[in-house]
Amino acid sequence: MSKHTPFYSMRWLFFFITALALVSLACSLGGGPYHEEFNSIGSWGTDDTSDASGNVRSGAYVFTVKTAEQFFWSTGGKDFGDGTYEVEATQTAGPLDNGYGMMFRVNNDTDSFYLFEISGDGFVLVARCANACEDYQILIGDGWFTSDAVKQGVNNTNVLRVEAIGSSMTFFVNDQNVGTITDATLAKGDIGIFVETFSEGGVTVQFDNFKFTPPES
Image (cartoon, rainbow, N blue to C red; front, top):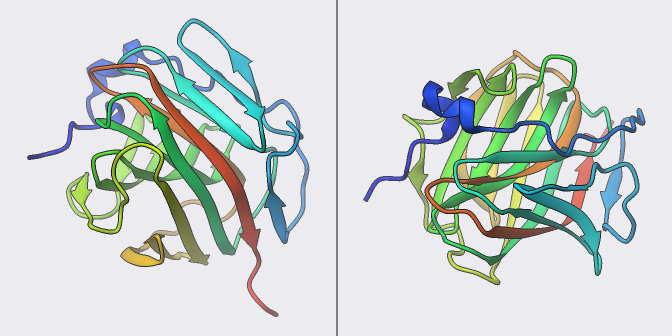
């Protein structure tokens, strides 16, 4: 079995995407440490449209993409560089053929970012996007790859972590190393969370405990 190619590697699908629908309007600078428990909306972008909704409820950011072939994200209005990024993600509804995860070192002016993505059926993807993913670069392997580190199905929490120092970045799913890259394109920026759908919509993911820890001096 091979995973569906994500939207940003199939240029024609881009015309069906409404990107940046949930971008935060607030911006706060700081080097951390940071721990978002989603007890309130804070600086995270929220919205509810015919295609997607994102809001803070019961101590989590609840993100639903309602329609097929969509990619929506929300950013936190931060500015972080070197350090450890971590978030908990739990799919609670919808088909397992999907994608969800974290963005980091986000440049909101150029819609560029690093993307760390897993799926409900046990795949992983690491990529760098520019111009809202009109331009992209797969950073590990040829695209989606399977990993036993991913807890598949609904109501199973996966912890995504990235240790990023300069151009060196190591990616972990549930404390298991799934790959290391070297890329110096983006040095710092905002953080974000996202959900992607493929052939079916109705995917809901709850995000919690987004953390950033700067390196020890």
